[in-house]
Image 1: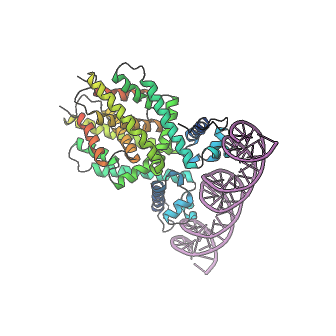
Image 2 (image 1 turned 180 degrees about the horizontal axis):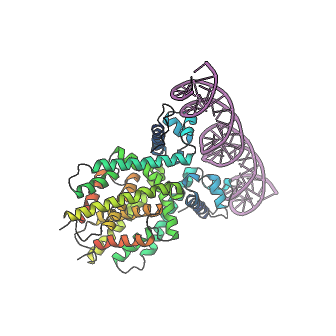
Image 3 (image 1 turned 45 degrees about the vertical axis):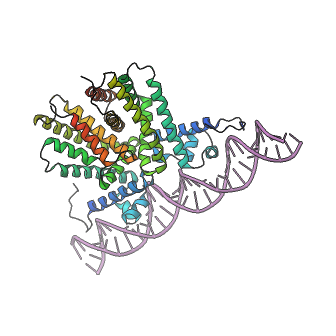
Length: 202
Length: 202
DNA sequence: CACTTTCTCATGCGAGTGCATGGTAAAAAC
DNA sequence: GTTTTTACCATGCACTCGCATGAGAAAGTG
């Protein structure tokens, strides 16, 4: 993705940027979006403030970088979980489960994600970035629903696009509720299966 | 709710606190949670910083006050919309619609609400406050579902508690998505009706 | 070697932060 | 009338903020 001149020095810019982005994630997760500052992130990343500034010219850009990283991370996790699932319905279930805060890592991811969700309401930069990944995931879900219908796993009369929207909204809402402390991982999984069972063929 | 001695002076404390809380809401809505400060809120409320400090000893307390106000506000809106609905299913639909960002005021409310939702993840104070209202609304929804089942409007085999959780999660997820800019009010209403239709008896 | 480019750092600046303080009107209590 | 309580304000303090700057290692190039 980066411009190829002749590799000017020994440092890998992408690695540094990712390192910074991950430091931002950690700060957001531990102390919240309000305590993200250049100094705090630099300390968390184990580098000087000047070094951070070299790779990121402004705070807004730093947050945007961290947000894009989250998107990439989610994409990778989803792609990894898709591989090796036997049927479309299995894929569908696995992907949605992957988006829910069912273990420490997914909880971490969703905490940061929710922070950006809220931040995006006010910062148009970030809202635009969020709007990029959204239809990607939604159309993928719809596609899996259609495939499951073709395989006779889900009821044929369902509107795949609408069901995808509802399913994803449900997942997001569950994330919110769980992060505030209202559901246990077991309850979350049970609710998802309850909803999916309803969509079954027969 | 306030202590009754002998009305010490002419000012109404509750009114002042509400005035401050509403100023906080406006700041959050317009500029985001990160730009909430005692000075900013005081300016928005049209009073001096000292006056704000008189009614609110700390910033955390100020935010908590604003959060509680949001809860009260939502409660009032829900109560108002319940009155005059003919059947349990009408009540259910009206209440959920009331929670969605379908017009300017509800959009405003949900913007502030989402900001607090995210903030609550890090600030235990606020998370505790959020956890108060949650089961209230959920049990109310479940109750309406059961009533609708008794009236033959919703399928008898549904698990009311689970359906209430799913319905509310769906609503919250839709709120998130809509605020980021992914759905229009019409699409939102259509999705809700699509989901409710699925629960129908027959 | 000199020299350019790449990278890192320390520091300074103006602005804004939460909060504490001391003072002051005015109403209420005596 | 004096005193006490209530309500409010202006200001100060120690601190943090984002960002700009200039200096200087470090590595590649001639």
